[in-house]
Structures are given as structure tokens and as C-alpha cells.
Amino acid sequence: MYPTSIILNEETLMAIRKSAAAQTGLSAVAFAKPDPLIPAPTEKAKFRVIATMVLARLGIMTALSAPLTAGLVLKLQSLVSPEAVVGTLGLVTSIGALGALVFDPIFGRLSDRTTGRFGRRRPWMIFGALALAIALVAMSMSTSVVMLGVFWVLGQILGNAAVSAHTATIADQLPPSQRGKVSGAVGIAQQAASYVAAFTAAAVAPNLLLLFMIPGIIGFVLVTLYAVALPDKQLPHRPESESGWSTVWKTFWVSPRKHPDFAWAWGSRFLLVLANFMFTTFRLLWIQHDLGLTPVEATKVMATGVLCYTVSLIVAGQLAGWLSDRIKRRKVFIIASAILFGLGMFALSFATDPMHFYLAEIVLGIGFGTYVSVDLALVIDVLPNPDEAAKDLGVFNIAMTAPQVLAPGVAAWLIGAGGGQNYSVMLVGATIFAIVGAVLILPVKSVR
Image (cartoon, rainbow, N blue to C red; front, side, top):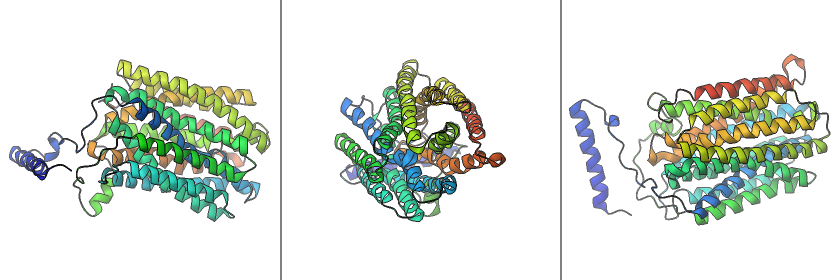
């Protein structure tokens, strides 16, 4: 804990600033922000911190991706009629994503204000990963759609306690000179999680218990390794905040008028993720329908396609993250990658065999790998308040979770356009969203 005299001096300094602001006719907000309670890092993070940070992201996202990649589809096919799978899948995934959307900023704010001796982020990461693993096992044993949906919603909510805390550690631990490269590696790990989940599904698809349980164990183990290696400093005292509805409102809101760059980046991420999840939610069903494959064959083809996607994503993401730090530019990478991702999505509408699917996945991997490697670094560069990094990143993560609420419904509506299984219309719609997402990054001014 800091000495009381230091805390009093900080409060006195804030009072002086507010008084000066009143005398000059300016709002206190116009003055420079006070120093954060925990200073931003100036030295590069150690290798063990970076390595376990990346592995933790791989682990927690593998656990969250496993149901979306194949687990929910295969489980629902054992619970409902074939005609009801699309609609039920859309409903279950939308409700789960809504839970994540609401609770991600809440857990972020709780993390920002945690003052225990184990640090701000560590307790929430371990708790979230463990709770998610338990929820996944319960999903595998579900005997009804309602039971399955309840445990999926709980898994999404509690798993995002780990996600929000982990994302905040990127801002906590990395100086600006490392953010592009390491954010790129974290983004790549997040996308690579889809392949780990798809590979698990291909290997153990007949055994639903293993399909859900193995990713949960992977997530918990890798997050725990990071929690042990993380130099998570104890918060000296809890930040001041408003009470009542003001606190609730600010938990979910960052003013686009005061922070326009943050808002434009939010909108861009929203549309890219919407396009991505429109396809990934129905990818297995699309393979079965458009390529004419059985569920088992489709699962194997999906695993190969996701492998192509992941390899191209890793290569492109690492190169883009390194180059972004090197030339100190972000926007050009984000714009180009979003356009390329949209073209890859459009190419899927012409796929007629597995090879076409694999080629389109390579293009998608290059586009999305470049995007996620630079996008998070850009957002951290424009965060409004260093003392509320987890909360603000939680608000930004709404741009990741809100599309997951909308994507299944939007995609299902487009698939059903014209009275048939029209997956091409859905893919064209996703292409449009991706291109608009590229355009939205243009007004960002504070990042080159």
C-alpha cells in the first residue's frame, strides 16, 4: 500500500486542478489526466510473460470456440430434428453471446477495481477459466435444448471474466514498442484456437464428452500457467467512481464524442466480427449442404480448411504485427486486411468442392490475421483511461460479442432468403459488412 500522505497529495493535486479549471472557465476534464495508479510499463515484457500470455489466449479461446466450431451443432443434431438445427443453433448462440456482451464490461470494471494481494487480473482469469471448463462438461451431459442453452450461457458469461482480465494485461504489461507484435501474436492465438477446436472435433467427434471436456481442460491449464508467470501488481487503493446509475452507465459506455477514434475502431471491429461469425456459425452446415458431405466427412473437411486458415493467419499476422511496429503505422494494415477478408468471404460463395473451400480459407486467414494483429494494438493506443483499461477494453469487446448475438439471426435470415438454403446470399452479405468495416477505420486521427 502507498503511504497515506501520498494518497492525500494526489487528492490535493486533483483539487488544485479542478480549482484552476474553474478559475479559467475550463472543465476539469480538459486538463491532462492524472497519473494512473499503476504506471504504464516502459520496459519490454519478459519472454516468459509474453509466451504464457499468448498460450493463455489460445487456451481460453479454444474452450470458448469448441462449442461454436462443432460441439453445438453435433450436440443439437442429437437433440432436435434436422429441420430445427439451424434455427435452434442461431437462438442458442445468440443468447450465449448476449450474456458475454453484458458481462464482459462488468467483469472488466471489477478487475480494474480489485485490490487483493493476488493482483487485479489473476483471480478473474483463474476463476473464469475454471468455471468455463465446468460449464462445458455440463453441456456435454445435457439432455435437452434448454439445459444445453443454460450451461452455454453460463459458460459464455463466466468465461468472459477470464477474457476481459486477460485482454487488460496486454495494456498492463506491454509498452507501445511491443504492442503491435505481441498483440499480433495474441490475435493469432485467438484465431488458432478455432483450429485446435476443429482438430479436437475431428479426432473425438463420436465422443461428445471428450469434445467438450478436452478444450475446457486446455483452457484452464494454459490460463493458470499465465497467472503464475504474470507480474500482476496489487492496486494501491480502489479508484474513485460515481455511484448509482452513473456507474452502471459508464460500465457500458465510452463517449464517441469525447473519444471518436475509439468509436471508429469499435465500429470497424463490430462489422468485421459480424462478417466472420455469420460464416463460422454455419460453416459446418454450409459444408454439408453446399459440398454435399455427410456430417463426419464435413467435420474432417472443416478441420483441414481451418488448418489452412490458421497457418495463413499465423504467417500474415506475425509479419503484419512486426511491420506495423517497425514503420509505426496501423491504419493501412487494418484497411487492406478488412478488404482482403471480404474478398475471401465472397470467394466462398463460388466454392463447389473442398479445394475451393481451402483456397478461400487461406485468403480469409491472411486478411483476418493481418486485421487482428494490428487492430488490438491500435485500440490500446487510443484507450480513454489507463486506470480503466479492462473496463474500456470490455466496452471494446462488445464489438466482438454483440456481432455474435446478431450474426446467427442475420445469417439464418439470409440463408432462408427466397425460401431455400441460400448460403451464397449470406456470404455476399458478410462481404459487404467487411468492406464497410474497412472504410470505418479511415477517420481515426490519433494513429498513423
